[in-house]
Amino acid sequence: MSITSTILKSVILAAGLGTAMAVTTAQAALVTDPNDARSWQGATVGTFALKVYGADTLANRQLVVNNQLLDDSVFDPTGYTSATLKSTAWSTAYNAGGCKGTSSDTTGTGSYAYTCASTANFTQLSSYANSVDNKWFQSSGTIGDTVFDLGFQATKAAVFNSIDHGPLPGEAIESTVYLSNDLVNWTQGVLERVWLEGHELNTGILWDGFVYAVGTGTTNTFRYASTIHGGPGALRVDGDDEINAIMGLEADFTPVTVPEPAALGLFGLGLLGLGAARRRFRVV
Image 1: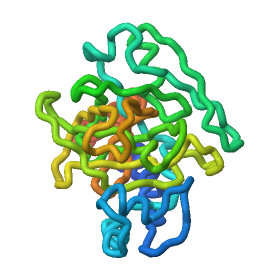
Image 2: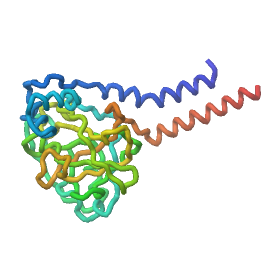
Image 3: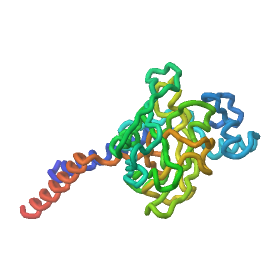
Image 4: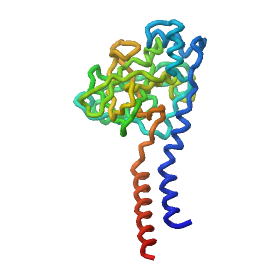
């Protein structure tokens, strides 16, 4: 094999690792029976028919199924990059973010218990917002205050929430998400998918559940997402929400791996090596 071919193969392999990882996360366990009798922390197919479409009827439960709204699986965010909380007048204000919470149960004891911390600056708040874990914060009620940079042009945005009490799914989906490319014009997100088991592999952890994805309802992409507590897209409005993290998705609900600086450097070195090899080939 030539030097050029070897370098090119290495570059393609490095660039393709993220794609290979993404394929597994896109697998779905969609709920396909409008009369499915299962309950997820008290929420049923009928509950979603009522909350999303206005009434628990067979026709609306069929809409839940037809629109592939519910996925009875765990959304695995391992290896993917969460969105980054942006610096705004709200997020940099003293003690922004309401309760900066840490959910206590990490083993599946069936507890919603949490503790709140007082944080005084943007760096501390960001530690509750920028990764999928057991830490969360509370959004502003104003569009454009609580803003996440997804890192690329996304077609969907996944919202990782933390649950502090029932009833569900209202206490999990209690935000409205707005989407934008310019931080000026905002489009209300449309609820498109709910991963009923959340993101923790231990499904006995009750504060985790009902990870959900929104989109524009079109193929339009967006770079930014702004969350507010309550609002027209929330299934419950009680003055607060608990946001764990946000993540941009492709049209098929597949996450995107945003390359780390080291990976980008490796990719650049590969391209430089490829160029050098091609130059040597021309000289010979």
